[in-house]
Image (cartoon, rainbow, N blue to C red; front, side):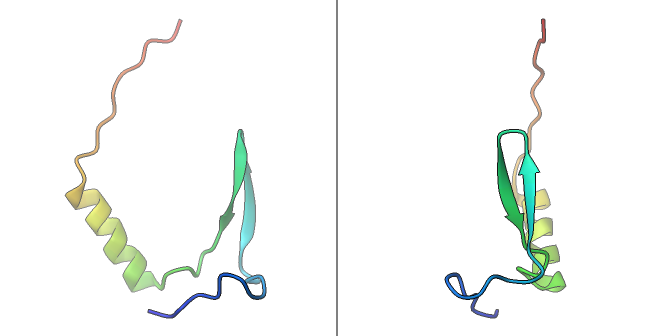
Length: 57
């Protein structure tokens, strides 16, 4: 995997995304496709995901 430069020039393909209570920087090239797909499969298959119900009044 390529070492990222955290303190150097800003990556041109980054995008600032604003959400309700903050913001984040989207880096579409942070991982190459094969590494990203591997991480996604591990997250989907190895974590016991839960979605609990919530009552809204």
